[in-house]
Image 1 (cartoon, rainbow, N blue to C red):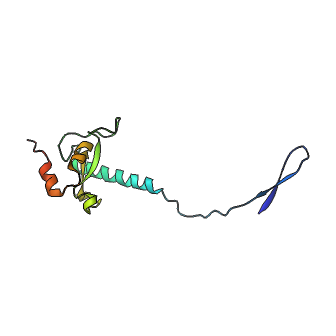
Image 2 (tube, helix red, strand yellow; image 1 turned 120 degrees about the vertical axis):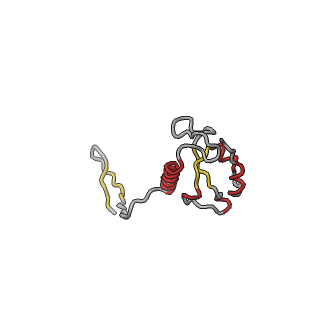
Image 3 (cartoon, rainbow, N blue to C red; image 1 turned 45 degrees about the vertical axis):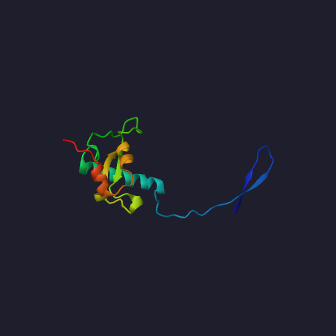
Length: 120
């Protein structure tokens, strides 16, 4: 601990100043940011694998650009839902419209396959 002199025009005020020892460690990203980057990486990998069409309806997706919160914006569909024990492995992920993803819900994979419309 050290003391520092403050004041002007001849007056003297002593203020206690503490020095803190900073711990130097590896800098880590905040949890929310690392989660966001992981999801973006998954989405880009699935997009590269499956293309730009929805897995459920087959129509083109809307990537980026406003408005983000539309039924046609891209989301990740878990074929085996996380609520049913599904994982974030790439073989369990598909690109889906937001509306299609809501429609498929947490149904089992066999039922999701039957819910997909047959496009000719």
